[in-house]
Amino acid sequence: MSDAHLTQLATADFPPFRPGSVWLVGAGPGGPGLLTLLAFHALGQADVIVHDALVSSEILALAPAHIERIPAGKRGGKPSPKQADISIRLIELARQGKRVLRLKGGDPFMFGRGGEEAGELVRAGIPFRIVPGISSGLGGLAYAGLPITHRDTNQTVLFLTGHDETGAVPSAIDWHSVARAAPVIVMFMAVKHLPTIAAQLLAAGREQAEELTVVSNTAQPIQSVHETTLGAAIEPLELPTPAIVVLGPVARYRGRLDWYVEEARRHVFG
Image (cartoon, rainbow, N blue to C red; front, side):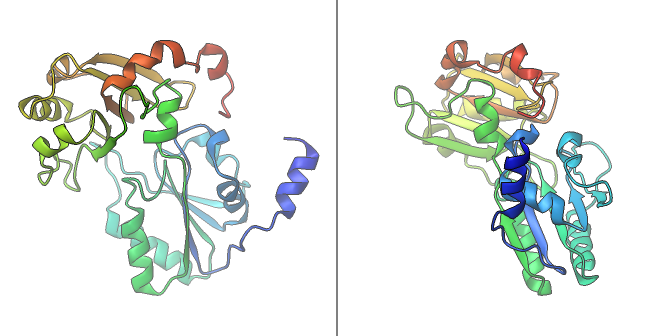
C-alpha cells in the first residue's frame, strides 16, 4: 500500500471506536487482503482483541504490537472457552472502559454466534457495532473456483451447519426438506459428521453420484480441495479443517475457474 493510500485510510471518515464499547468484526475467510477497511481500521483503534482460533496470525499482525490479544478460539475436540464465558469477558473488558474488538472468522452473523454475543451486550447495556465480514461460504469458495450460484445450474442455494451447540448433528434439521430445497447445499463445520449428513441426504432422495467438494483452509496459501461424490462421503474422510463442504453441480466449473493457483498462493495477503 502506497503512502498516499495509507494517508487516505488514516483520514477516512470511519466511525469512532469509543471506549467502553465492543465491535463484533468479521475477519473474512483467511487472507488479510479480504478484511474490510472498517475491520482494518478497528485493528488499529482497539485496546484489546478477543479473537477466534480461525483468525490467522497474519491478520492479528496487522494490529499494533501494544494491543492486547486474548484468544477465545472454539475448535471441535479441543479445550475451548465456553460461549457464556466469552460473552462475560467482553462485558467485563468494556466495563473497564476498553475498546474491545471481538474478531471472528468469516462473518459474525453467518454461523458465527455473533447474534448471541450481541444479545448479551444488549442485556448488559454495552454499546456495540457489527462489522460484517466475507463469509468462507461465499468468498472463501471463490478461491476454489466454486460459484455457489450459476444461472445454468441453480437459482437457489441452502446454507447449513454440520453441528449444534453440543457438537452433534443438528437434530432440528428436516433433511427431506433440505434435500429438496436447493440444487446446491453449502455446509459449515460439517466434516466431522459428513458420513451421517451424507446418509441423511441420500435417504432423503439426493443422488449418490452428485458432486461433493470439500475446501479446507479457504483463501490461505495452505488451501486444499478434495473432490468426491455424495455416495462416497458416507465413509469417513480424513481432511484438514476448518473446511466448507459444497454439494451440487457448481463443482463442474472448477476446472475452468480454479484461478487460485500456486502463483497466487504465494501472495499471502490475498
